[in-house]
Image (cartoon, rainbow, N blue to C red; front, side, top):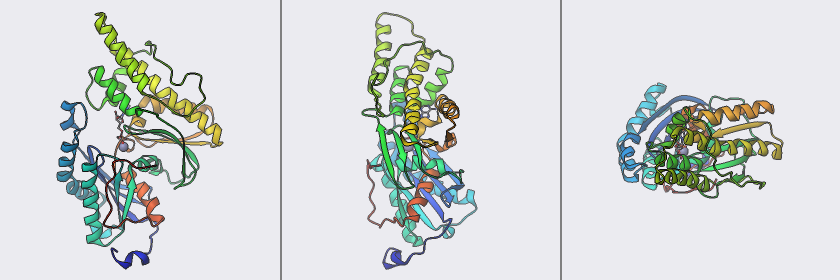
Length: 346
Ligand code: KG4
Ligand code: ZN
């Protein structure tokens, strides 16, 4: 494979792809058949080691990956009842993410591909989040509008085909997940902030008035830094005046301000492109409030909504297998010189 054999490699229908993901604090391995069917999906996380620092410490994450990557891969093979020799290709996240963390997965994937003499498929983490919607949904096909909402990216995307994308709008500053994490910190909640804000918001009312994003402007773009700063200022002003703050109300108000705008953008995007299908991906899509609001908005307009299961929204390797299969079918194979990249274009 790593010589001339790559040119004569015969692509397989329903190929079995072993996917590896190590871009942040999750070390994950999954076996996906034909890009849609999950045979196994294993995740080990160093999250608990980062909590006391209030965010992911790259060096700690990289070290954790080195001890976890082989174990998680073995676990994925065992759970699927397969051996390495059964695998048709190795897919791996090469970016975007923490360089040291990515390098662990990339090096391990290269070694496996070389030893087994099978294709090495480079996968973008961002495209992986978008492709998560294909998992367990054999009938879903582009075109559709995809909402990408993670800790690193926030965008409204027109997915024209499996490999053609048009970004209709994106955040001009912080990603929505990043805003959740920063607001969580000022509310005294632990990392990762998103799920903790969601939990707290359940006991609150959206009574705190927060600024509207791009009020009155027609745009698909987003901006979270103003909203985040407004919450931080609200907390500090009340603290200085010795006033008691209802944190659940703050969490609830922030959550709706941050997420309602995404739902509105998605609806506008379906009108612009005349499509009747919506999908979403990224850690923030695990948020129950967002899922409900999307479901309501889509059902009112007879739009078909495909949301990945919550565990396929946050970082996982099955989504890398889904996107890996699309790249595999296009013969997009990497050589052993594949390198990790901290940022990648969509
Ligand atoms: O996709 P992801 O796992 O990693 C990146 O690629 O960034 O997303 C992580 C982000 C974090 O900012 C986390 O706080 C947020 O997703 N998140 C949530 C929820 N679960 C995770 N945000 C809001 N509500 C949630 N339930
Ligand atoms: Zn992610």
